[in-house]
Length: 127
Image 1 (cartoon, rainbow, N blue to C red):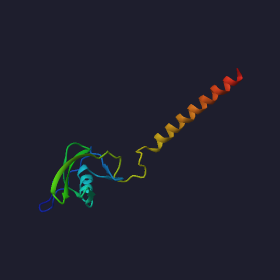
Image 2 (image 1 turned 60 degrees about the vertical axis):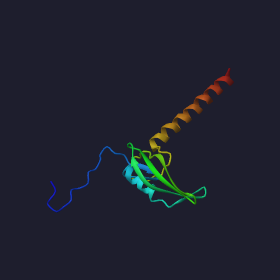
Image 3 (image 1 turned 120 degrees about the horizontal axis):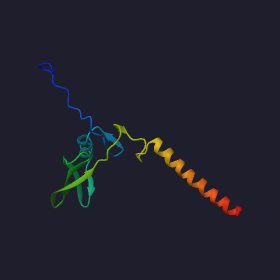
Image 4 (image 1 turned 30 degrees about the vertical axis):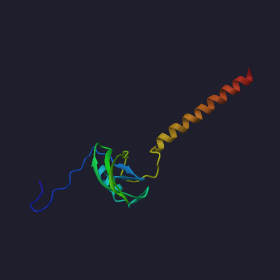
């Protein structure tokens, strides 16, 4: 129970996964969407596009509202964006999402295939 005058600690979601946006895993979907909204305006056709708002749809999906500012006026466009889940918060050093154990397993599989092919080739020559 929080003490009077002290705000309670924010609720943390133990089941929530960090979300990826532009190579960085943000703690939540709203943080990832806010990072996208904070980007500068992008050139588009004869004007610019600015992300102005978002609404969360699911654990890894959000609707981002872009406003297109054109010489003839402005129009809004809603884009559904998927923010993939990450294993931890921070910059990804591995953009493939593979862990070292996955890479080793796949590498051994490839080596095994080469070894079997070499064995077949050697047996074929012997016959």
